[in-house]
Amino acid sequence: MKEGPDIAQIGALIGDPARANMLAALSGGRALTATELAAVGGITLQTASTHLAKLETGGLLTQRKQGRHRYFTLADEATALLIESMMGFAASRGHLRHRPGPKEPALRKARICYDHLAGDYGVRMLDSLVASGAIDAIGEGLSVTPKGESRLQCIGIDVSGLKSSRRPLCRSCLDWSERRAHLAGSLGKALLSTFFDRGWARRTAGSRSVIFSPEGEQKFLSLFPLEA
Amino acid sequence: MKEGPDIAQIGALIGDPARANMLAALSGGRALTATELAAVGGITLQTASTHLAKLETGGLLTQRKQGRHRYFTLADEATALLIESMMGFAASRGHLRHRPGPKEPALRKARICYDHLAGDYGVRMLDSLVASGAIDAIGEGLSVTPKGESRLQCIGIDVSGLKSSRRPLCRSCLDWSERRAHLAGSLGKALLSTFFDRGWARRTAGSRSVIFSPEGEQKFLSLFPLEA
DNA sequence: ACGATGCTTCGGTTACGATCGAAGTATGAA
DNA sequence: TTCATACTTCGATCGTAACCGAAGCATCGT
Image (cartoon, rainbow over all chains, first blue to last red; front, top):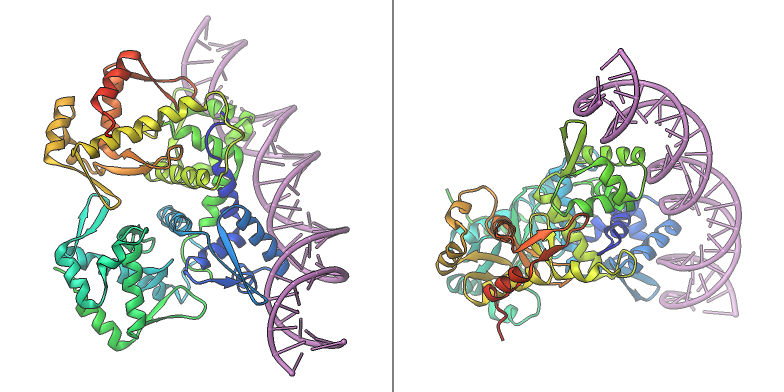
């Protein structure tokens, strides 16, 4: 009966509300300080410190000292995927964090998921790429077609360069708000990066939501049209 | 700050050792009674009852009355995938349930993961199917080739029939003992079923491990050879 | 050198939930 | 009907862990 890995430990780590809030905040992809994380957890700095230590020894977090600050990030992409998949599962069972607040719509429209675009816009982007034949969706997996490679080149993304990295190019990530897949992996990251670089969109201060500029939104929507 | 799904609730549900053991036992795929689950959790029946009630209202379990017994199963395949992915994650961080016991090798060799084959043999089977060109592995996704479809037909599996079901045909499931993918989905289930039907293998009483008969093992190994 | 900021460690309190004994309900068997 | 089995609910206990105040380090600015 005492065989195999122990899911209770990581379950308990994620199971505390303060820690869960911290992890959710870190799913936004950027590194946060202990003070900032204490705020999102709704606890004092001392308590946050012990929580963060537990998460780190549990292998969910890594920290990086920078001057007198300590920046925490999720340990790796696997951790981010676990958090996101738990969010999807929680959403499917109706476990919501309070009633939907006023900022909820912005989050559902476009937000950051670790390092790529999620929400309505993220799902739309992947749908459009598949519909136009730039990406092949076979079963659960995604792959870029030759046609798609040249098209992405036009947008300014060096697909062959991304291919040489260790990280998978395409990954599908289940979106908790849309309950459909959006594009993760190094290509998902590269696409979001170019949106930021071109000024089409920007991150918001204390939230995971992504705000598009009027011109950026127009460019985005025409670049990734919705098929009938 | 209180936006999106609440991962703390399901985290806490999985985070209790007794509940985690029950869920792990139910990953074996068969329905278990409250008394049996109390045993695997190492607790009394009363305590188990309250745990099971919590897991059910949390959406992780479903129960089915049958006479004076109550049979519990994981709520659906999504739940099974979540548990399995948490096992993979826990294994990657070195969170083990005690030191490896004597039954551990059998588990690593072949075991049931919800309704399909996992462990060394499960990984070998998928590897062999991919190497022989029966299954295409593109990115993270899997799909059966026409060649594979006819080959599986010879083994006695009606692929076109499986395709018509709502459940995805192929899914890759990360194996916690091998740290590589094995085959899930309706095809994975169908393959394991035929092994049982032909008497090549059988389930064990109180464990997830799968025992192959000498002839069954030989048939299996020759059917899914290891490439150089 | 000195104070301010960011964070950790220590000690003590408190609250929640896991646990079990005992009693209650439902189903099956004799 | 009566007893036994399977399970749930109630009530009370107990242990753990979350929490914060206070004190202790470390780093930066001046």
